[in-house]
Length: 429
Image 1 (cartoon, one colour):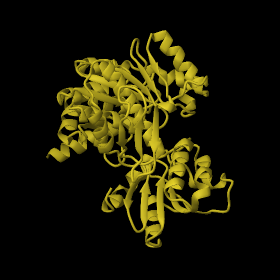
Image 2 (cartoon, helix red, strand yellow; image 1 turned 180 degrees about the vertical axis):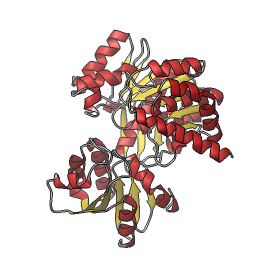
Image 3 (tube, one colour; image 1 turned 120 degrees about the vertical axis):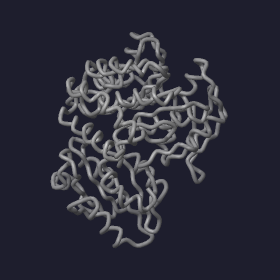
Image 4 (cartoon, helix red, strand yellow; image 1 turned 180 degrees about the horizontal axis):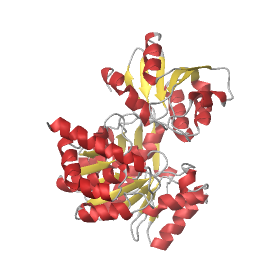
């Protein structure tokens, strides 16, 4: 019976997708007021950005948990299970809680034509209050200024980076996109960002917003830390600030994850300056214990299978850099499934120099990019490029025909990870 209630509630939430994306705060304000504004009952940290915001959010949550706090985490999208989006101390929201929320508030949700993401955000606000969290780390869904998460009053606002994405909704220049993402900056609330303040348009816009809001800003200073790649795990060395001297292994693979870890440490520095108790030991435990699946994650050996949810050119570039560094002079077999408007051809061009083969697949979503479109627009012909009818067909075929020394890399979208989850779980995912 409990399973039936959950499945019914889950279907109801997914049915809200037909309302599409609504950028605006009217619905979430109304729904949150109906719930008693639960988002005001705990401290929060707000995270926006183009890439890395999920990993950065998880690092921050892991550090706060290691410091002895009860921590809620809202991220999107999920890989295989809707419940992954909402966690407390790393544990997914219970099916019973989802069913209770929908059954109790269904009438208002229907009347207000609340979207999928708005329901999910309100559910997270409510669940975190119910679970008596001390902190909630909330990742934006799209943009920032008009994102449903943007009714919180955070202790710190974090913007990982900015590049051109969703230009039809956020603007066609980095200056305009920075303005939308910078909309999470609240008066007097510090900003921590992975952007360097070197006069680029994104930095200039964020600086303008911080001056307007009288908010202090912490732009990225590459000289403040070192990424050490000499050991089995990449490690973060802090050179300055209250955590100077810290040498911490980072649980997630790749130099870009060390950059994300540093943003989490910088956020912790700001919280420490506000009087919250966070020690070097908590930082070290938090970075080492953080578990965030689908980020350069090895799920099988002999042959090696690596998965990553990189979905744009920048994401593909950091994957390519990490693979080249960790496996010098090797070539890889890639399976790629993309969603629309994610610059698929340029993504394939990015990994082509490392590829022995690239297998392009359609995804089981109306947003799937057309493999024929992708292949027709790529400019290289040295690499073996092929199409498969589905991700699972490609995975099984390549796995069966691989030598134990081969390396298979799966990229392109959270959707492809979700489709392959039943097979990846059997391999340890």
